[in-house]
Image (cartoon, rainbow, N blue to C red; front, side, top):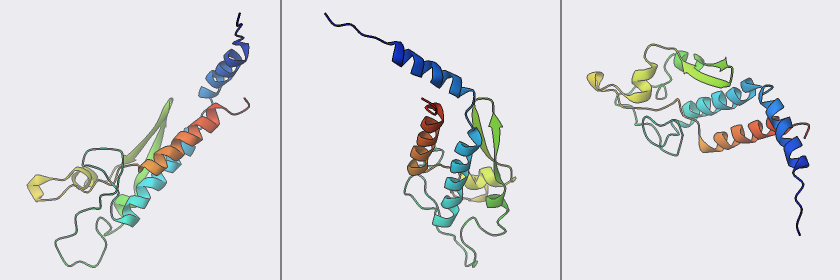
Length: 139
């Protein structure tokens, strides 16, 4: 006969449930903000336009001879990316009026998609580790 005692597992699960309400989402959001900033430094790290998960694809090169890097003219769009904490998570936002046209492309002005609001898989793993660390603290 085999007897299973789930008391220990139940106690750990209850502790994790208590920790859910104590998650510091700003730490997870900071990882996402750093990931987006790295996209500008690298000249793009996306998988496909419209996807939030990053990858290894670089942005299309510029069609003019301007000296500044792609998507970095004034730096306002890059500096304007911020987070808003929600009750159960965090949202990363770019409020510049032209952000959507740059991120998704805009056929009317012949602007190619240059997705910058993506999180690279390495930073997704880092976010997962941070969330796990917070959920399992004091267990």
